[in-house]
Structure formats: structure tokens, C-alpha cells
Image 1 (tube, rainbow, N blue to C red):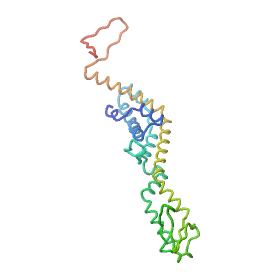
Image 2 (image 1 turned 120 degrees about the vertical axis):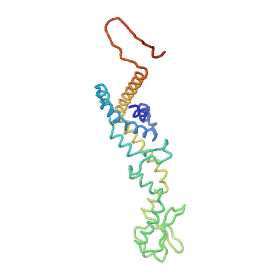
Image 3 (image 1 turned 45 degrees about the horizontal axis):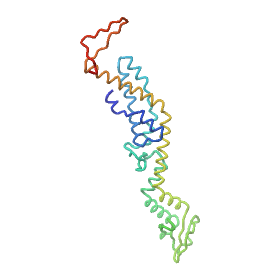
Image 4 (image 1 turned 90 degrees about the vertical axis):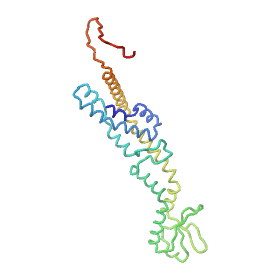
Amino acid sequence: LTEQLNEIGDLERLISKVCTGRANPRDVSALKSSLQKIPFVAGILKGSEREQFNRIADKLISLDKLVEKIQSAIVDSPSASVTEGGIIRNGFSPELDELRNISFHGKDWIANLQKSEREKSGISSLKINFNKVFGYYIEISNANKDKIPADYIRKQTLVNSERYITPDLKDYEDKILNAEEKIYELESQLLNELRLLIAADTEPIQANAKTIADIDCFISLAECAEEYNYCKPEMSNDTVLEIVDGRHPVV
């Protein structure tokens, strides 16, 4: 039991931080790790022949669904701050996965788009470029004007070529240029949603905290009894207090 309790954090403090919106990713992960130990503690207690241990075990509430939700959302070793990023696990949010892919592989997407647009239009010289004024654009020489797809939107006319955009290209441009900021915003939003989900289980978490505190207290008393040879007194209804070879525990 001591080994299991050593891996359980201060549940009351953690749930308090969750409910007040102050829990950082590391706090949420610590709460998950603590709740994961509850079934193991209950199992040890139920393995005893003493009925009072079973009664204590029955007070412990397993929150498997909540643990699974946190596990699926938060990485194993998150940073303490959302601003450092990377706190939400890949596969949890399709939108976040897309933004991360854009942020890390944006150039690859543009190169693949250029290749597919060349194949679709039959214009081998088609190029996708970028400048600070127009952003991303498709440039086609005047010699290939007759092959321009119908969904291309003319953006600028040059001496020997014309520049175009498409709705898909502009949408992706917006995602590339704002991906980092959106990743931070989305991770913050997902963390807050997770806090609200955890807060809904405040009552059983607090009940577990109280039971764990009781178990911790009983372990301390048991260790003292073992180390100092304490014995259970015999209670009676008379007025006699008889102490044989006693010693004051504080002294």
C-alpha cells in the first residue's frame, strides 16, 4: 500500500486547481497518474481477510473512463506551460493534427500541389511561388493561357506571364501562415475542455482523496504499532485505568 500511495499526488489540491482553471498540463497528467493507482489500492485491500479493509476498499471509486480520456488527450510527459506546445497527443484532435502537419510539412504540401496542378492542367512550366505582397500564387506563362483551368482566379498580369490563385491555395496559405498561433489556441481550448470534463467528477475525486488520506493515516499507525510494539487496549466499563510497562508515545 505504501508503494502505491507514494505514487499518488495531493488529489484535493489537484482537483482544486482544475476547478479554478489553474491546472497546467503537468497537473492534469499528475491527476491521471494518481487516479490510475486507485484500482490497485482497492485490489490490495480486497485481498485481505479483514472485513474492515474490504469496507475501506468499497469506498474507493474507480474513474477508468476519465483516466482513459486524459490518457488519450495529454502526452506522457507534458510541459508545465501550454505556451511551450506539444501537450496534446497526436490523434486526439484531427484539426490539431492537420495544423501540426501544415506547420511541419507546409513546403511539402506546396510541392505536391504544384506537381498535381501541372498534371491536371498539362502545363509543365506551372510554378507555385510566394511573396509578401500576394502570398502564395500560381504563375503561368502567356504561352499556356489557353490551358488555364476554369477555377483559377487571375491575381496579377505580368509582361510574359500571369499569376493566379485558387480557393484551396488561399485556404492553405492562411493555415500555413497562422498555423503556430492556431496550434497554441487549439491546445489551450482542448486543455480547458478537459479541465471542465475532470471538474464534473470533482465529488468522486474528493471522496477518493478522503479515503486515501484515511488509508495513509492507518498505515502510519500500523508502522508505529509494529516499530514500538504498541498493543490494542482492553476496554472496560469500570473506572480502572491500568497501564503495564507503558511509555508516553510523545515523550
